[in-house]
Length: 254
Image 1 (cartoon, rainbow, N blue to C red):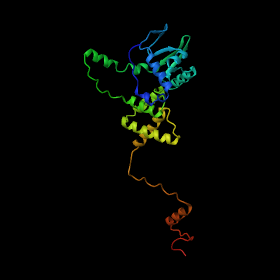
Image 2 (image 1 turned 30 degrees about the horizontal axis):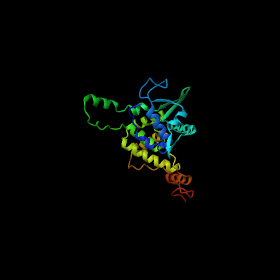
Image 3 (image 1 turned 90 degrees about the vertical axis):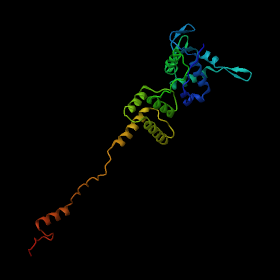
Image 4 (image 1 turned 135 degrees about the vertical axis):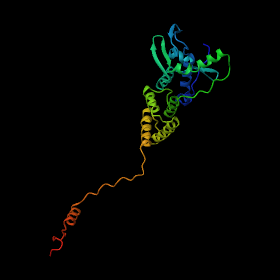
């Protein structure tokens, strides 16, 4: 198989970067995955971003040199790494009679991005570098969330919905990112270093902060509430109004 693949920088923020076997396995699957639909592998038709292989064969594929010889991984080791990649939402698996069908999650999103620019440059006959592309606000928020979460390279549908809800608030992107840092720091301090797993938490916190800032400020001191009159004050007011002395006689009488 010839050609090349793209590797997203987010891989550096993922736990598998520190797990040699899982990192090698994901890299191998990414390199072996079909780059188009309808490709046959060992007589089995697969689609873009997919690869079919048995665990025993993967153990051989990922063999490494040790001293003057080579060492093959155990199938149980491969199984643990596959589970880790699935839990991190980096791959999906499906058992078949010919082996396990591996699907790279978001393969098209990362491998196809930029192809239009590259093809247009080829047609134009230019080798000049592409213009700088501004990263969309959604992607910047998504990237910070994944970084602070500390696991996985993808977000759930509910996370994406929560990000869109925040963007609809009309808050400047720079402010959102700063608030996310503040929210994150407060959370890990209160929760013994545990990270925020769902963006819904950020959404609620950001909405609360915006509501606080939108409350009108005023220098007017509100009128004090009238003091509740007790029985003695009421008696004194009645006496003053009707000219009655509290001793029991009216004014001018002996």
